[in-house]
Image (tube, rainbow, N blue to C red):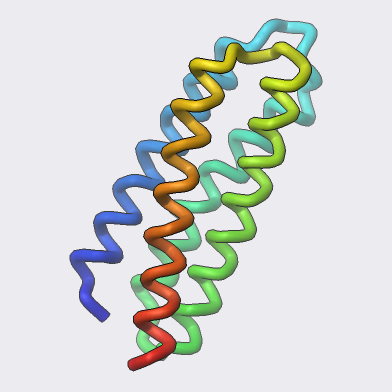
Length: 118
């Protein structure tokens, strides 16, 4: 595996998590606590799973953790849609985070594909 690719996606995922956590802190007090907590947790889980995958030796382990990261990213994307559709966040904030999440997903897909071909 080209570790520079892994570290690039890890950095992007960390930045995504930090942006989501900052956004969650600014949500109105009437926003559901479970939604706020789950959104922050799933966004942070993306980078955690990537980091764990990078630290694994076998291709199967790496791919498994990258798939976990994709699952967590999907959860975060679902919660972002809930936030924008219920007017908890504005569209500008949504698209800034959404576009970053799409980029991370493409990077993860490329890493998974590359690792499975090795």
